Image (cartoon, rainbow over the protein chains, first blue to last red):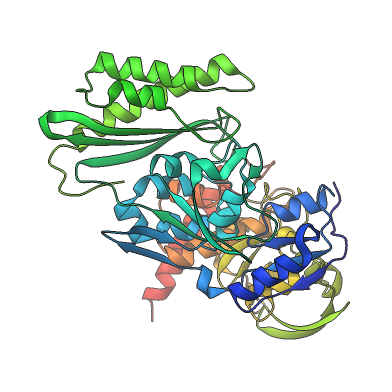
Length: 295
Length: 161
């Protein structure tokens, strides 16, 4: 690794429109920089040597946190992990996302790194995708041809791969509100210390329906597959049923089977089982008498 | 291509001609001779290069210098503001929270940001705030003690006339 960067041209667009025009002009020769916590390392390692950088930090229009009971949460991609983790709106409505944002890197990295940059990196062991896929988050992308909205679980196509084309920008992250009787949490386990990479992460949402059955459940798993995945077979076991301890454990075992860890597979599958079981067991009592959703 | 930009570092304005690919740590150490900011891991794990930008701890080795022009930058050289040590510096010295000293500037600046936000932290809150600053000498116990002692002293000073 080198300590310094090689020269590049530097642009500071004054609007999202201008940023997209620059991307269209330079294509693969350009890279977008937001917090820089990931890109700068790749450039020091000479894995990336872009001819020009397009700096987004000045675009206040991409920095917002808004909640509406019907539309849900709208996050600007330039929000840092620290801003999301301490946002009263996020903590009130989607605490599981605040929890996950507080697990990213170190405090300094959380002060610098942005949610948009994190999602665009699409690293398999990141903490924000598991809760976001469980919350069925969508990304709004803007390019020269216009806008499109892509669900997060279709945005990532593999380790460090996304459907984002070189002239597109993530301009918004949308999280629909949880239905009444819905609650969610994020559980994870790291290698050694809190700042280490996550070995397994589970973002879980449970919704209690009439008759005290599990009307809906969504299990997002991270660090145990090429990208964050939904454990849909485990979800199907629980949906429509009362989550008795035996059934929850069976679903957790099914989730572990759905995981495809690359290294330390048996251990990571075991972690998935423990985390999913713990999450659902803790969430279910919380969903009783919930007037609204509690992420 | 050089760009002329204004930097507010430790309360002083510096007009510097810099290249877009230069990092904040290069500007601080090589252009301005402010070598209190330490270069260590280079990848955002150790916190030795921590400086405060608008009061927030960030890593100077991963920040493009141009990205922080016009913002308020505080390095360890600007903390005391006179011949007297800042209470955090005094507590680190008095309580033996320094051994080799390489992590100290980053530790103290991160601790300052914590105390600005939370003047009466618990030991657990101090450890959490310093989770991004690695020390290979002290074992952290004395560092946490020093931050708590400085916090107490600073609270006392604010109350006293």
